[in-house]
Amino acid sequence: MKKILIISDGAVGEHFIERVTETYSSENIYYIVQLKAKEFENANPARFKFYEFDPTSLYKLANLLKMEFIQVIVAMDNQIDVENTLKNIRTIKKQLRVIVLNQWDLQNEDANVVLVNSNEILASRLLDYLPNVPVIAQNVGVGEGEIMEVLVPFGSSFVYRHIGVIEQKNWRIVAIYRNRKLLLPSRRRMIQPNDLLLLVGEPLVLKSVYRAIKRELGQFPEPFGTNILLYIDMNIVNHKTIKELVHRAIYAHTKFKHDLVIRIVNPSNIEILEYIKELRDIDVVVDIDYESVNLRETFLNDVKNYHAGLVIVSKEMFGDYYVRQTLYEAHVPVLKLSNRNFESVKDAALILSENRDLEKISATIFDISEQMNFNLELYNYMNEHQEAKEQVIEHYYNLSTIFSKSIKVLKESENPIRILKQKENFVQILPFTSKLTTRRLYALFSTDSEKLYFKLDNYHQIFIPVQL
Image (cartoon, rainbow, N blue to C red; front, side):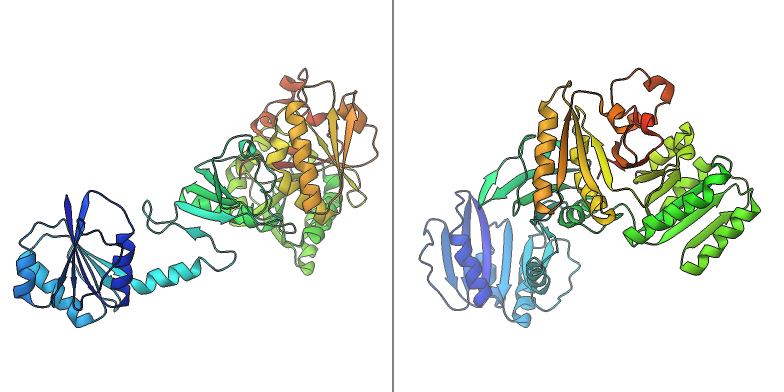
């Protein structure tokens, strides 16, 4: 039997003893010292021994400490009494572990004395009731936020998503509470509004996940970043198209209502540079690097320095194998603009595939379509396996109800790429996965519609990373 000494005086101490009596443990026996005796109905006489004396008396406390206790808990309302009781304990037992309720900001350098700050605990508990603030486990693990509880709001991007398609890198959904019942997560289980998710992972990652769960429409390009970055390498981009490219980027900037940064590397046309410099008058940031640079070496730093959440490039730049690899490494959405009119685009086209990457990026797609006022069209090629596609379609229908955004699902017996080539104008939205970084020559004979993205190169395209 493990002997534990509790020294109590006041309301908190009494409430603590009451809670202890309700906690069953056949391995512990409690010795309780009180200034004034109080009876506890649930106290089992075999496990609870009560004493009535003043613990600031060294003589009286010394008699009790002749027994071997593994731990002492001190919960008293008077600071002087606490300090003297602790002094008495240390006089008799030099290494005994002591837990002290600290209501006065006491300081102690003894490694075997744990001061539990009551003000911090109360403030932390009250903080849990604030809306839009994550509930973090304080007394589990290392207590630094590696265990978090998140309520999924009705308009969340996580609502009606299957757990199996949520990218969980350095974090996990370990439990779901629905209608006060525990549900163990599985790949096919779908998250519903007002579900309480229990998350475990790296504290910094969980903070990002929390923001993603609470995110509603109208925030893009967040959470990827806060600014829009138009990147122009004048060694690659056709100079005749640059002015129109800038014009279309400014249009996207007015729709998303985030700052636009125009970054030019390898400048080689004075007339175009003068035209772009004049845009500073309309609050556009223009950054020109007059030294010859290697895009791969500078681009990732630019994305970080400008906190870019959306990168805009021309089709020539995205078509460059090395540029495309660099864009993928940045893990931010990319808007590839073609030579077609961008302001007249009304439809966003999504080609369903046998993987479910489109479900992973669904919230971002709805956010973009809402801000740009796009109609969403899902193209389902019926000659392919349908099970995974049906789950994606179900997910999109559910989100369309939540966000009051209509979608159209088109069942096609012909390859959707051929059908889309007959449309006048649209923007295609695709998951930005590693298979898009391969050389186009290797994908020519592929049946994967995502690998064949370049077949629609003459249309605008948005590539969205699948990782959160």
